[in-house]
Length: 144
Image (tube, rainbow, N blue to C red; front, side):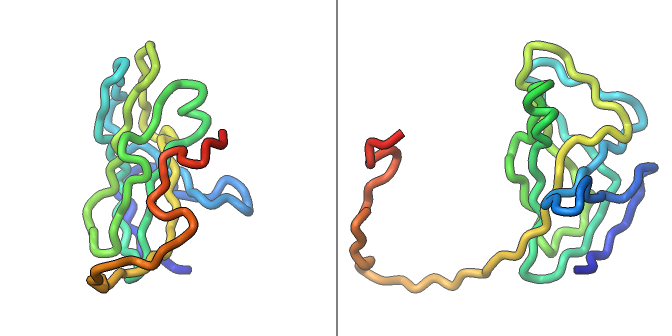
């Protein structure tokens, strides 16, 4: 799949780390380092602009290593970039650790997955079909 991209950063284009990776790493595009204090959040620019085809979205997700080792995650996970959005990709990061975290220019801050989706047309009805599960949810099976 070909996707048009504008790169206004000094960083390389997003790329897959391994042959079977689903997500591509996105990098911070900063003039100077940004420090996230504990529980602080910030919108981190990437310098990237994309043009997705209709029926696709880009999902921005945390990097597992940053989450586990540093307590840094994407606040609105997964963040969605719609096919008609043409602005810069920004990533809302939050520091859930007890220590300051410094984001440097070029640092891998999240991953992005391109995914297809359906567009729904609602069919307004008075009653839904019954199922074995019914309205049970939120642990209704009692299984761990």
